[in-house]
Length: 116
Length: 117
Image 1: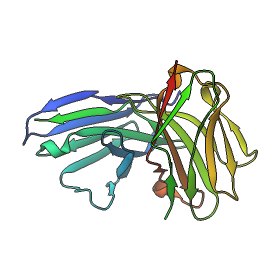
Image 2: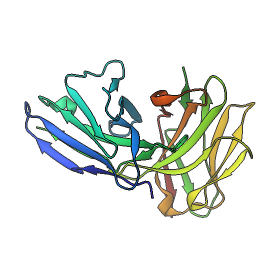
Image 3: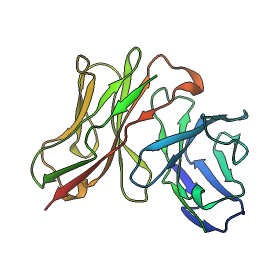
């Protein structure tokens, strides 16, 4: 149980276009979802936290107009990278916490974004 | 503010030998501590956690970790390393006092473990 999926697993897009990444909790209801960014051989950097039906809370330094997060249902959150630039190329990982999970966060497999 | 330190970027160990990946933390109040493993181009897989109780925690794939409150450490250990254990390991902490959506994990910088055949 407690499986989190992400789609797509990798995407290549041209500079200036927008890309949407989906994060789904497959067998539980995720009241809270987290979006992380990871550069090669570095740690995970929290970008934002979202609760179902509420606006996301962004970490300092993360542009909310560039990284649009929607958590419209208890099983789906989306991250849209708008007007992508090469510096947005990174590995994006989502994580979900369920209603009954006081301690656990479950991580998705990640999405590799390359902006050319 | 809470923080995690993984002092070693890289740990090399021969297959069959014991391994240790170090982690120290700083947090207000009681810590919740976690270890995750990441394989190339994959998300994080949960290994084990310490919440309360016995200081020695056993987790997946034969890994264990010992919570040491006086040294604020939570080192990951395995008695006999396998080549397949080679991966990136992350220690994480969060404050037990946090509530709601603010219960965020803070990750260490990661330690690349290489088990040599």
